[in-house]
Image 1 (cartoon, helix red, strand yellow):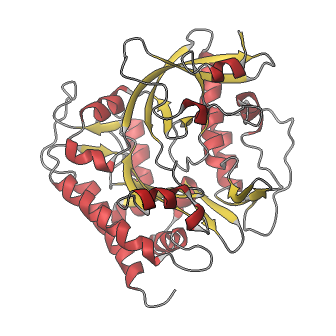
Image 2 (image 1 turned 90 degrees about the vertical axis):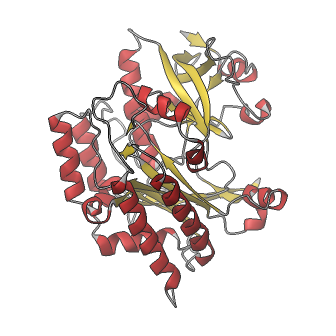
Amino acid sequence: MHVSLWPLCKSVQKGVMLEPFVHQVGGNSCVLRFGEQTICKPLIPREHQFYKSLPAAMRTFTPQYRGVVSVSFEEDEEGNLCLIAYPLPSDAAVDLENTDPSADCEHKSNMLKWGKVVASSLLVDSEHYSKDGRSRHSRKDKDKSVHKLQEDVELEWRQQAEVLYYRLERSHSNAVPQLKHNPWSLKCHQQHLQRMKENAKHRNQYKFILLENLTWSHTVPCVLDLKMGTRQHGDDASEEKKAMHIRKCEQSTSATIGVRLCGMQVYQSDTGQLMFMNKYHGRKLTLPGFKEALYQFFHSGQRLRRELLSPVLRRLRDMQAALEACESYRFYSSSLLIIYDGAPHRKHTRQARLSRSDPRSPVVDVRMIDFAHTTCRHYQEDSVVHEGQDSDYIFGLENLITIISELENQSTD
């Protein structure tokens, strides 16, 4: 099927072409950019149900839910693979963009095309990435087949890219460095697109949920993804999956403090680089290593960003109080995101402009995400009903609060 990308983009009513969301640092689901303020991800019924029915007290701690779209897997005139989102007739409340549509329909010629993502998502750009900020990766054979087994892909990632540095480049038209692509998000996109491509003959319509883009107001988003709780498997997990999750928890800080690092990107203004840390590295961290990673996340490369710590702690304590009042919920395999702007000159950032117009606009944001394995007594189909609060998640929050409080109380950097 041949479609023209530019007419589709100009005609928002017909469809919106989805782009890679470059600030995804953890998780396995493919997250896509729907618009400046909106992202989307494949619809999982349990997560969809959670967003539609979550208690009002929890809404301030989760991304805003913005409805459902139908996504088609299509090709443009040049044979590039594209994902186009269309409104669902049954969901009239879903507007394809809740801001000025022209802001999200810039010319697509500079976009990283999906067809190229498939071919290059695991090929680290030697001009931009390095393992330690100094030595460069050697360029890989670009003719290597992208149809690798999942095990080979994960092995390659663990061996070569647990911690990467990406040199941000300033363009003449924009003084602020821009992130073009993120190694973890490309990995997720490649895997998901390959699955969709394989299934396209049988099924060309997919449902995605629309969610608030928590990074949209930041120029250079610094993002920390933390897997929360001492247990990660859902009640419906197979024995094999249950054993796998238990093993991962036992071999990481999940078992000891109820939280482990699942992904991170942080801007280091002294070198002009973004540092990426993925979940494979996060699983290997000991408690001292986890504390060091948190220190790195709040460090600009020149100083510890102390002004961020009190707002983070306030949010975490408010979240803890809300969760303690949540009866029967269990947030298995859910993550916590901490986000702030790493741009060196805050007065030029979108977040700063927002703060001037709205003094409540946060310097730092803390949200719960990923609810594919969440359960509570309102889910009628669940065979297991839990009582009381999610003590495992709260245990992780308490330890996170303690560790960040220790950072705040340090007398020197």
